[in-house]
Amino acid sequence: MSLEDHQILNRAAWQNFAEDYIEPAEKAWQSDEPFWGIWQLPETQLKLLPNDLTGKKCVEIGCGAGYVSSWMARRGAEVTGIDPTPNQLKTARRLEKQYQSGAQFVEGFGEDLPFPDACFDFAISEYGAALFADPYKWIPEAARVLKPGSQLVFMTNHAFAICCAPDNEDQNEPNSEQLQRPYLGLYKTAWEYSSNEVEFHLPHGTWIKLLLEYGFVVERLLELGALPESTSRYQWADQGWASRWPSEEVWCVRLAN
Image (cartoon, rainbow, N blue to C red):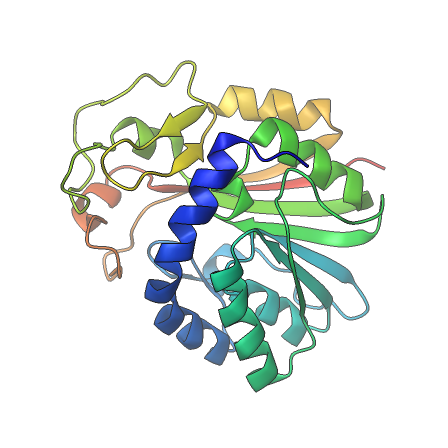
C-alpha cells in the first residue's frame, strides 16, 4: 500500500505525541469502568459498549494505546486493535502484557484493514480512524470486515466544534464563539499551525449518505458537550463553551443483514 500524505503526517505526529498519552493510557487500562472522549464521560451515561461481549470478535480501528480494546476484552470479547503508530502500539503491548487481557495489537491503517471479509461482530473507533482516516476509505473497510447485522460505533469531534476551532500558533486556544471555517463542504482539515495533523470531518447529512451507501443503518447520534462537573486534560478544552455547544459526536450504526 502506497501511503497518502495525511497518513505519513499523522503517523509522524503521533509518534511524537505518544509519550504524552502514556499516563492517561495507564489510568484507562487500570479502570474497569469505561469513560469517553475529551470530557471522560461515563459509559453508564453513553452506553457505547455491549454489556456482554462473550465469544464476540471485536476490532478497535485506530486503537492508540489500546485501552478501549482492554475494556472490550474485560467484557469477554476476542479483541484486535489496529493502529499505524509504533510508539502507541508499544504502550498498548506493554500494558497488555501487564494486565493479560488477551487483546492483540497489529500495525496498520484504517483505510486498509488486514482482515478477512465479515470476520468481526463489533467495531469501534474512539477518535483514531474516526478522526485521522479518510472516511471514504475507512467506512467501506469497516463495512467489509463486519458481519451482517453487526454494529459500528465511532466517536470524534463534533462538526460544529471544528467549524469554531482556531488554527493559530497558540495550540491551547479554545474554540471561538464565531465560526472559523465553513460547515458545508467540511471534509479534510489540515492544521497548519496548531499540530501539523490532518483530520477528517463531515457534515451530518454527508455522514448519513456515506453510511447508507455502505449498508449501515443509523441507530443513534449522540451530540455531546461537557457536564457541569466535567474537567479535561486538554488545555484547549473549554468547559464553558462545551456546556453550550456540542464538542463531540458519537455515531452508533449497524450493518444491514
